[in-house]
Amino acid sequence: MADIFLSYSRVDLERARQFEDALERCGWSVFWDRELVPGVGYRDVIERELNDARCVIVLWSHTSVESAWVIDEAEEGNKKGRLISVLLDDVVPPLGFRQSQSATLAAWPGNVDDNEFQLLTRRLQTLCPAAADRSPAPVSPRKPVVRAATPSPARRALQWHPSIAPTLLLAVVFLINYAETSVDALLTPAGLGAEAGYPIADAFRWFERGLSFDLHDTTSPIGYYGYSASYFVIFPALCLYVAAVLGRRAEPRGYQTVALAVAIDYLISLPFFLFFPVPERWSSPGTEAMLLSDKVSDRLIELVRPLSGLDNCFPSFHVSLTVLVVSACFMFRVPLRSTAAALGATIVLSTFVLGVHWLPDMMAGAAVGIASLLLASRVVQRGRSPFPAYLPPSVSVI
Amino acid sequence: MHDGAVRLTVRYENFRLDGAEVTQQFDVSFQAPADLTRRLVSLVHARLHRIRPVWLYNDNAPTVLRDVDFDVARRVPFQEIQWNEPQRNDYRLEGESRVASVEKAETFEIQLAKDEFPRRPDNRSLDFEPMGREGFRVLLMRVTPERTLFRALTLAFVVLLVLAAVALVWDAWRWQLRQPARAAVRPRPIPLPVGDLLESR
Image (cartoon, rainbow over all chains, first blue to last red; front, side, top):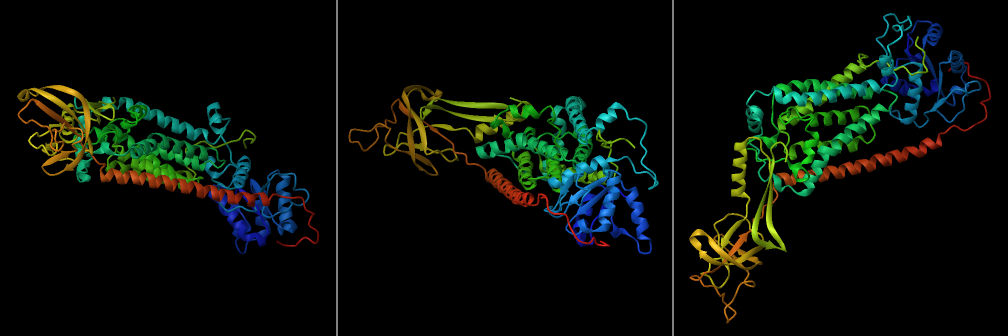
């Protein structure tokens, strides 16, 4: 049984294929007659799929408004209150199908973040939540989805909007990071203080072939103002922008993936933060580096210090999150992603120029960011998302 | 400041340039106390200006014998003094701080412009008295150029910022292109399709 039964005219095959592909990318299973197996009575199969589908989408075009088959299938969906009309051409649906809302995809370029397509997916969510949002699929394709008895108020609250659970997860990561930074000093070997990480810093200097930050403070004001802005302002702004764009989408997989990736990223980094103390470059003897943002204001570093310990340098969480967020922009086709990529590059460079991170930190951070995003994406795409299903208030629980 | 970082301000008393006392400011980042000492020593050696006397045996041009290896600013402040006891660096200031431009900066000496120094009645040679108590102290101000690595990284920042702006314009342009197309396809009421319905799709 597929989530969606797709009704269309053969003349519109290519556009139907593109549409079906986009729906599947959003997590819905789609039945259309291209899937019919030779030798199987296609009338029976179509009738059965039409009955079982949770939603019927009709692609209205110049041809399909005159197709008896399409009109019959639309009639069937309409009777059950599961019909969604999509206008592929500048046409008016036949009589009897004009009352339902229709999405206009005549100029649709085929991407899932198109506004009209997003409106459509929002409507679809109310009829049949995408696979990523549902509980694990039932074993038998014929059996209806049976949910547990009345969900708890907390669970119901999480299901109220698809962005709530991922946002809560991000908040938890934020809080744990805050707590971890507070207790971090206690875990440093007694009596050593920041010196515990100096041997590691020396190893990193060896890796960098003794790169010196001599005359670091001669950097021009464009450099230190610009990179300070990247590190302290553009970085949080970029993260918030991507979270806001993905979180507002009807299709929640993007936001879920990013939130899960951030959690995975932090989980991978946490042991290093706790037990592998690497001091920031400027605080290590022999580097000649200074914290360049001090030339703008020494308050800047104090703002982030509660979340970023002095010896929590490896791997660079700034680089890690930047790489993760920019990659997510391209993965989920976030608007202004090219701009985000250029600004992301300035953030990555700022960790080096400001005298905070070492090259191995940055490389490890980038690797962890990409790995976390790929892992999270795999988890969410395979329908193993840890987030509860989204149930709009208007949808009754089956 | 924060995490143990300190800001070191060096004042060169009585040396004034463009109406303000000459100062230098350094932000010194450190964690270990021994590292602070080392960084301070390094700063004193490599970054501070130097005060040197004018060599009075050359009355053709005010000359400072060079014992430092750095680029000197084109304009430097100097003071006239009266020595009390040169061995103990004991002196008395005479008059205000003045500014001289550097005419030559050679391997062994730095020559200043004559304009601000006293001259003999012939108006050609300088009125210096090497065996007398009058002397001049010059502040050799160090010029420290931006390091190539950081200059390149600053340039990289500007290039990336320009790229970000171009990308923004590009995205806005694409978005604008899509708008008319969308407006054109809004459904309008048209007559119902007439004619026979197709039997099959």
